[in-house]
Length: 204
Image 1 (cartoon, rainbow, N blue to C red):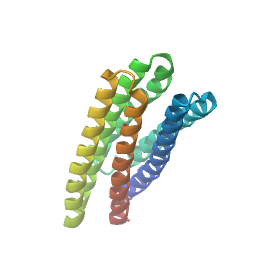
Image 2: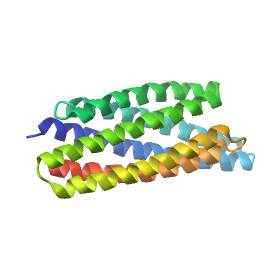
Image 3: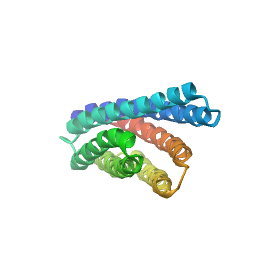
Image 4: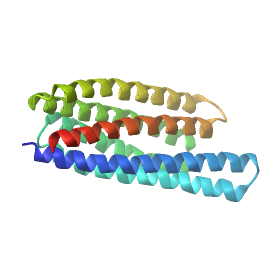
């Protein structure tokens, strides 16, 4: 009945797995970079920086998969259409932020903040879209689960935004703050992927 939504959500699910891998690479990279700098081990710090950059690149690839999936899913639900637009904005800002961080760390971190905000809005609309489909399919359990998940994801993302905002104004703590933000981001992504897995099962 909602084959476009099912195929689209499946691609978004795959994108989320990539994002989790990207966040893990970022956390490991930042940890190595911080330890390496503290111990004056430039080789370890450099390896950590490369791992963190790889995590950012994987995150961008994940956003592309997200866009492909939402483009297909939007044929069945208007909320997915709004999420598609938000994800386009998040991708554009993320790509700029990746290059901006190396040239201007402050500008790059602010761009990442706005990219995170766009991702939050996209997540919200994906969850809303699934809730509408669940109600259309008379799956009250999934609709209720979606509402609870929306609250949890919103709380997680708001915490993430506050930490990123604090990191943009704090001095000499960007690496540690970014690592903390990445851990919170990982928790949110795991919650989201659980929700997407249940959504796929509902639409199958």
